[in-house]
Image (tube, rainbow, N blue to C red; front, side, top):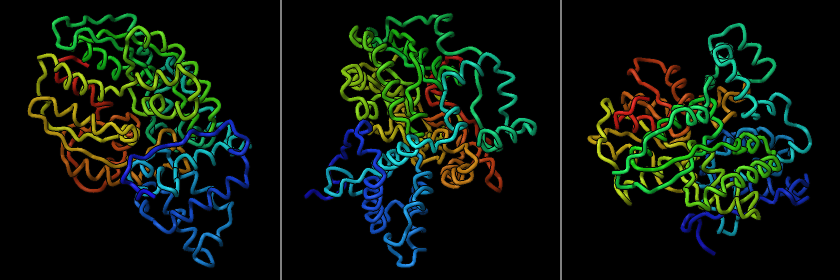
Length: 447
């Protein structure tokens, strides 16, 4: 038997199409097996709120052991999991290939999949996951949508909380009236033929957030790559399905994976790399889709061809070298390494990228922000999300850098809100949606 954490963790295929996956008794048996191991270890007590909830349940039971805990009380444990994967990737000594074979996040995913099949997931939660529909509708009336979603709107936010379950104080992403795809069609970029990396070709997968909420991430990516000689095409067949994964609708994720992979496959066959603008989407395409739809050749080809944008820029720097003209960014940067970037097992690429800037003053924050996609804005989770992210907010204040950037734009919003809630004097901190925007500024590209 191998000792835990001495080998790279491996993951099993998610058997969502096997009837046993949804069998309530078999699920309960696996929950009890895993929870009992977690109870005996408790190494993950300081990650998300799932583990404190589990340990409190056990400690408050009549025997102080799992056997005295009712299975119906497992729900708050599963609900607290943000599917960040950090317990699997960084903490748990019992992940495969260890014989205990623990994968806590995917077990919580299975729990939600069973709930989803039973219809437990609410109507409002399901509607929030329809990011493409919501982005198109809200983008068409962006000023009105952004007014209604503003935290200070005493008219609409209490209504959204009552009807949609979204906490009235949670910061929500803004919508943009002009999508990234539309901007890319209207605003061509000139590729620098003298750049060392000239000859590279890449498809930029816009992602729902990059397309509808913050096109500046895509604009900065495209401009930086053009400066470095990379020919790009912007393609967006649809959302990667991470919102549906959070809700346990794995069949919908498989459907999205098949559709997106089929549309991107011709570009891969023509020699294009694929770049995802948001780490959650890169994680889905690289790792989650093959575990869900591994029988689809297009999905497997896409997995091999996909890069996170920070990873891709660092790759250019290491292989061909960056184009000249990169300047410094004054004031320093606190860079938050998003959980879904860390789960890609590629190293701290965002920090590596920013350190390519001359005289770079970079402080790394390597801890979960607590947001967890749509999880952290829900009424039942918002205060917990702020609690989990409080150490990150404190570290950003201690760093006292002018800029705060996260690879995950939603995490950046959440951290900024956490900073606002801290007591005492705080330095002036400018939150930037993604480190690629700072990299573009360092090239003198106005974003």
